[in-house]
Amino acid sequence: GYSPNGDAVFEFFDDFEGTSLNTSKWTPENGASWTVSGGVIKSNPGSNTVLKPLLINNLQFDNVIIKARGRWTQSNDDLGIFVYGDSDARNIYTLWHGHDPYYELVRTNNYGHRYILSKYRYVLPQNTWGNFKVLIKNNGEIYGKIWEWGTTEPDWTVRATVTPYGKYAGIWYWDDNCYVEFDYIFVRKYADNEPKTTIQNLGDYYKITIHNPNSYPLRNFQVKISNPSFITSKFEGLKITDKNPAPNKTAIIYIESEPNDANIFINGEYKGITP
Image 1 (cartoon, rainbow, N blue to C red):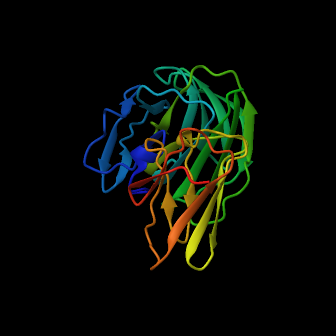
Image 2 (tube, helix red, strand yellow; image 1 turned 90 degrees about the vertical axis):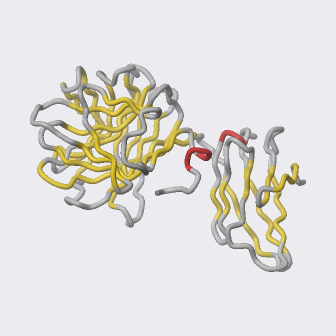
């Protein structure tokens, strides 16, 4: 899977472990059929020209980034992430791969009627994992991009400003013989000026600086630092775990514009807030 603790870190997460769809997280709409095995979710398409959504349960999203890894394996190549949908995903906005030689931001109505809002010339090769990434802002702005797994992430390539039907999101396949798979999906909060981190090796200790430009409560955001690797948990304040501890070194954490609820943990031990 993508993360060892995705449910704790993200607003929503599924890496499709197990042997069946987790119905506490998902609701298939419009007769969608999915199979879960081998750490992926796979479509079971028919031959109808309709959209088959998989709706994230009981969660409405705004001002978030949604990212999934997906691919098409045979026949048609229509799949994507949808956002700003109504409660049964009948009407949605979606990042749509499959209208060769483009992918598009599309508005769909009644599980099928398609209106192109923005498009970009790119086709994901068959049986190749791709990154599907969508940003939605609470003023109705949508940004999207698709790129091949393991290659450099591009800038946002398609964008539109819309009137949302609702705030529901999920994934989908087109029913007309579209055999598609998803490996994971996550939803994380977004801000124009997101918290960032830097790490300095100062000999006997590491200095980790959390740059928090707008004094956001860090409980609501996720931060990753590499070498050594740290990760935060939104449910435990700022939880920092050193996965590759160096001998005889400690971590000194400095938070700019520290919020009141940014509790710090190191290797599971509560450290309070350090100056």
